[in-house]
Image (cartoon, rainbow, N blue to C red; front, side, top):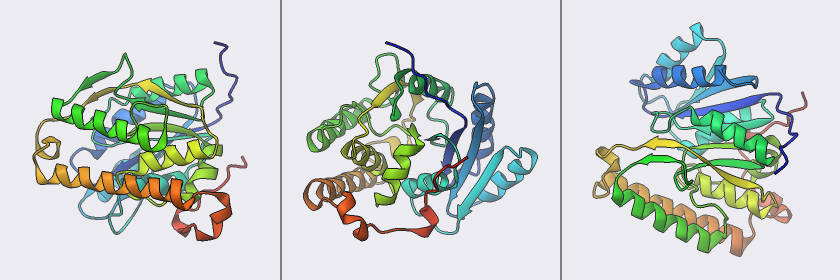
Length: 273
């Protein structure tokens, strides 16, 4: 395969954070160290998804000593999908991505995804637990649920990827300019919506890259916990809603532009730099 000639002038990385006051400084340090070693100029944007604890204050204090980090946020928790889109609206990169806080995902994967992005001349690169060289450590129950969900996604949307839900992805700015104004999901099915709408609009160069991920066995990681089951049902509900809008209502079509629910806070600006 001939190597891509894509020119990357700036890479933007969004870090959504919700109730992460104990770990957010550590997370940003690790991510910043990885970005500092890349051969691309970068910007790091932390989005605090609601002022519900000390996450915003700790992040701002850390950013005062690290001016390369931009910290933004809002008062009320609105969901990870909203936070990522909020950060993307503030970004300036030719390539824009995000990685979850909490460090379940090894941030060294950012470099791996960007290398894949350039090599494949991709529209979108996604971290995948199903990639043959990924390092994955998480409960077998979650593996079964994950495989079942991905089968459902394939049946509903025909996406040629094996894992849509890992919280590390990169997008061409051009893709986001076309896709983001159409999106509605603010929480868990954000990944499926953005990928399926991009595919629908003709951005077919969506590839998977390996990751190193370790998910704990306690709390919401336990499949019998009420919190975990609540998340599962919320994902399924939002996923079916995306299918309904995409396949039946054709809501995401340009002909329905007047129906799109524009949010001025999520106005994705065109990079003219």
